[in-house]
Image (cartoon, rainbow, N blue to C red; front, side, top):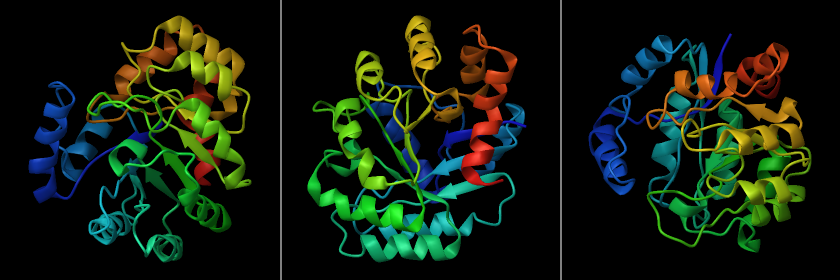
Length: 264
C-alpha cells in the first residue's frame, strides 16, 4: 500500500483559475494535472498511490466555509482523505474546527505564507489548542514558498516554539520540515515529536541533507508526500529509494506511518 500525505485539487470551476495562477506565481512550474478531483484520482492511480491526503487551504475568511464544505463532500471517497482549513482572522475559526471534527474530517492544513501569519504568533494559539483538544492533525507549510517573497512565516525555529501548544495531537511540517531551510530543520525540529513529509523534494533537497534529517529524526515520523500537482508521488518515491534506506524504513515512509497516523 502507498499513501501520499500531501496532494492538492480544487472544485472544477476553481481549478481552471487556481492552477494557472499558482503556476505563474511559482515561476512557471508545470503542473502534472489540471487540478480537478478527476484528474488527481487518475494521476494517483497512475503513480501507484492507494490513498492520498488532499490538503485544502482557506486563503481568506470568506472562503473558509466553502473550502471546508468541499473537504466534507469528499469524505465518502475511498481514495481521498480530505483535510479542511481555518483562517486565523475568521471569527468562526474555532467553531469551524468543531464542525470539521463532527463531520469526520481528520485534520487541517495551515499555510502561514498564504494566510499571512507567523506560526508562533500568540493569536494563533487558540486555534492550535482547539485542534489539539479535538485531536485533529495539523499540517503546516514549512519553509520557503517559491511563489511568495520573504519573510518566511513558518521557519523550523518558529515552528519548534509552538509544538507544545498541540499537546499530544499530531503536527506535520511539510517539505522535509522547512523547504530550503534544512540546516534549521536539523537544528530545531529533528528529534522532536513533529512529523515531516517529503513533499516537493525530488530534485530539490540535496540527498546528503535528506540522509542527515532521516538519521537525526524518528523514521516513524516521516511521511511520503508529493505536493501533486507540483511534483509526483513517483518522483518522491524515487528520491526515498535512492537514499540507501532499509526496505523496512522505506515501507514505514510509504505507508505504515501514515496508516497509523490516520487510523486506517
